[in-house]
Image (cartoon, rainbow, N blue to C red; front, side, top):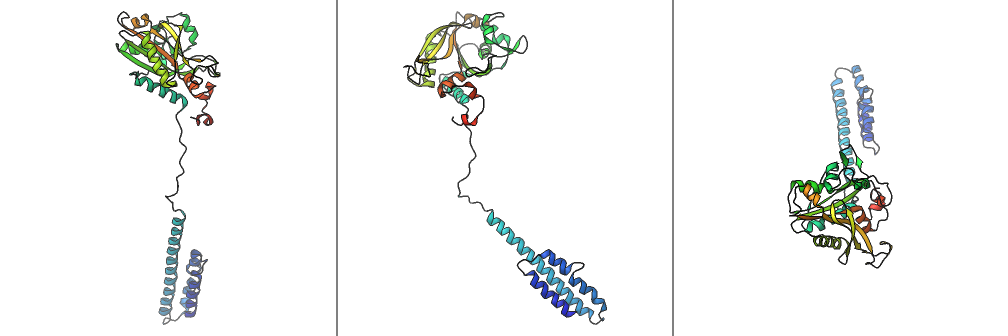
Length: 337
């Protein structure tokens, strides 16, 4: 039995130190319930009482050796595996980083920001208002009572007889004049809605920047000077403007404003349809009825107002020939800005 125990120890030693040693399989082979060392220990009952202590001590020595080696080798394997893993997963911080793609500002947002910056530089304030508006602020207070023909040209989205999606941001001007007395100098950018067919130049949703100035002694000359500064700031220092007579119910007199073509300098090209001028906005002196309705005395105060389509300016500035491109969120288009 002694020889068998020593043989088991030697076999286990060689097996445990082999390159392809499976520690769990060797533990079962030698120390399991049906293991080789277990089988030898069970046979000690056949020994004489004098032999049992010596064989028992040797068996325990062999068991302790095998268990100790399995534990030690297991710890070595785990430490080596951890070291290899750390080596493989090491991060080289000196390598260039893979940066995520960064988006840009939408051309409509860029255009609106540019327009706002110009007017802020002239002392205007930005005022916001509701997109779901009352008929009074969208029409009646702007000198367009019920039945007025100008209402038909707006193609308005009505929610009820008295509530609608605003067709212009002019309602913000009325709300401002009701709350604040002159001097007033504001712009009101925002979304507006009209029942238009979707095509290259029309959309049922678009954006406007409308402006209002009310004070003592305001004239058409002030209006022209303000719009000239705006046009030069947006389209270039060589830009010129011209006024053409027009009619808006809430201004008198009224005008449409053209800017000299910034692509050809007024000589005529495809962008300006060989006219040298491009229409960009409507404007005029605030109608006395509008001032009076806001409890502002038109004999003491006067003012001017204007409205500019942001989409139109963006299309001109960035040479975009189809308004629908601004709403389709095509990254191939937007990445150009």
